[in-house]
Image (cartoon, rainbow, N blue to C red; front, side, top):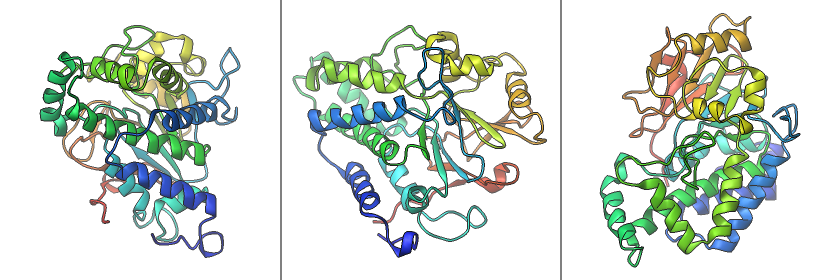
Length: 352
């Protein structure tokens, strides 16, 4: 891997160890062992539960709230729904930023490690989408057979757990600069309630993942993983943009966002809202509330699939950037407005 030229021309040992651990998770062909993986889950939960108040203002219970305040003086890379796409995240970490995004051409991972940029993921780590329809259908037969056979589901969970391992390792290594928002797929319990809904799309994905983890990883693992999910922020405020997994169902106040953990309507309204389901004017109202001095603010989301690189809604204020067939990211500069045509681009496939 190319060295960054930062910190005297090489990465510190702990940074290199983090890179190698993330890379290993991206390439693993076997399922992770339960006990080591549980340790990673617990470490990530502990990191989320101790985030600085200037990053995540505390809620009424004194815990980091649902509002994430990003650094205002460094650029941000925004990644939409990953859905078990390990190669997508690894391709980004190994890539060099586009011209004009930041000075220099060193890899994104090294810039992240040096605190020179921040990465914001918009949620949805589990459940491969259309690329895995045939596998899901095969796995559903395994599910109905109580997983006496489970080769297809093994492959799905290898990818999903591997992707979330990469996310957790990055969060633990770079807690102030790597962030992952809760999406509607962050519901390992497959619960309906508390702002969540049991998930199904092609088959019974939510129930299938829950049953698989119960059987092969155990109930205590599932509860620990659920605690990680419930520790995630739901909404991010940048210098000239706001972001959440889904379009806000209505204009939410700062207090509601901070206390989202006890407000199911806020959780649902930031993770499940479909196109044309939001109260008209919600995006514009939130942008005006949070950044009234910015002339051209933007609200970025994933959640609903699009064609192309982006889709503009709400009078071009709202940018949807989730294309499940392409590796689309937003390169948001530290200064200047978000310009969709310039700043939203597709990553090339990762070269090994």
